[in-house]
Length: 208
Image (cartoon, rainbow, N blue to C red):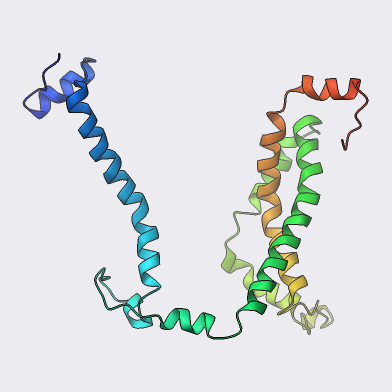
């Protein structure tokens, strides 16, 4: 059974030479490493959870404090009002926008994966390039387009979608569609062509 080197240089030499630790000494080391990595990854989630029990001033205090007197005023402010309409609007917006994204992304991703057009790489780059634009760069144009008055230089007519569910659905669909096409295309490329050919031989059409 291999012995553990006494100093750090000998320890790295043993690793580079392929001489590992014994089962008794390696298991605690890997366990401690896993716990440290797990705590580092979990800490942001824990900090966000604890921030919900802080006052507004304590939440932005620097340096942040992990030991404080908790308060429920943030949750009372949210659930103290009629929370159901806001929750219902979120559910409707999420489900409807997801439906439109899948309706548009599936045929586009299928065509890009199995029937690659000319310059298909340029098409994919165009889709992903829409994610490069920072959110702050589109806030003002979206506000002008969605407002009732619109842009005076373009006739002063907007879509009048501010504060409406159709406006949110349209915005979420446009934001999520490019990344959905990329992800679905990768999924369709993993489907073996033989499976699709066998389905066609058995009489299955393209939608099926």
